[in-house]
Image (cartoon, rainbow, N blue to C red):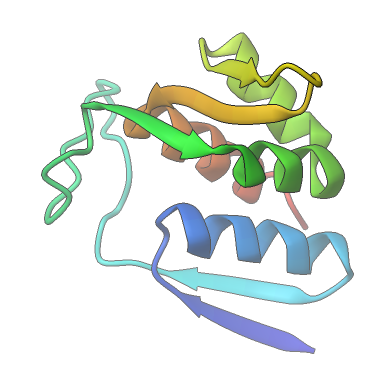
Length: 111
């Protein structure tokens, strides 16, 4: 079954990867073509794109259970996982640009 995802932001890319891992044919449509040849990326309409983000612990949990390779790639790219006193993820810290770049690369690797 073919699925079309409108929007290549964090939610759209996460959904696209999760569906592809379940055997779906996924097409992601976004007005932004992604990083340029030079590597620079100005995400139109996302004013906080280059700023630090604090993603809730549930984001790290979902990545860990659904796509641990993406979580590993994020930490290699500089993301930090903050844990609570019980050792559960409380937050995932990184710039949104890093988060989207890693998800975009991982989504492109899916068949």
